[in-house]
Amino acid sequence: MNLREWALSQGIHPQTAYKWYRAGTLPVPARKVGQLILVGDLESQPSVSKSAVIYARVSSADQKPDLDRQVARVLTWATEHGYSIDRVVTEVGSALRRHRRKFLSLLKDPTVDTILLQHRYRFCRFGAEYIEAALEAQSRKLVVVDPAEVDDDLVRDVTELLTSLCVRLYGRSSAANKAQRAIDAVCS
Image (cartoon, rainbow, N blue to C red; front, side, top):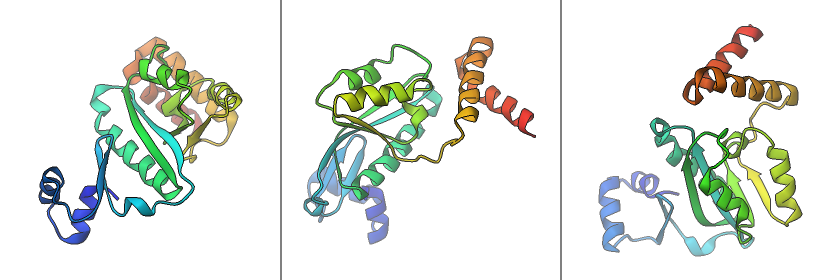
């Protein structure tokens, strides 16, 4: 659990717990993973010990607060399923951009065995199946933590196509919203 949750569960103000962490006087073991501070019995993790990297992405700078929420959700899921997180990679940039430096470095790095992400579209909009197949051929894998996405392939493909077309018409920042409004209008 993260430091804030631990502090509130113990009746301690989160700022006090953070001061204790910085001073090294926190009464429980803690470690920093990305922007989060994890608290608890770190030695009694499940014995599976799978090594992984968390990848989180948002489209624009005004969505930056969502990065920490994504990382927290994936980190919670990963610890429950016995993954050992090596690092957290966060990026701000459209999934439709071809030159995302951190995204490409994850794909090129042979030491990254598992990439954990909250939603498939946070990794890429198109061709996720090809990336998964390429990673699998190298004995690596992509794990989507929250598979509660659109299950119907045809609906997902049309949504992605409409988003791509809206990017060309309206620009990257408002494309997803306009595409969603268009789909809602057609479906209702």
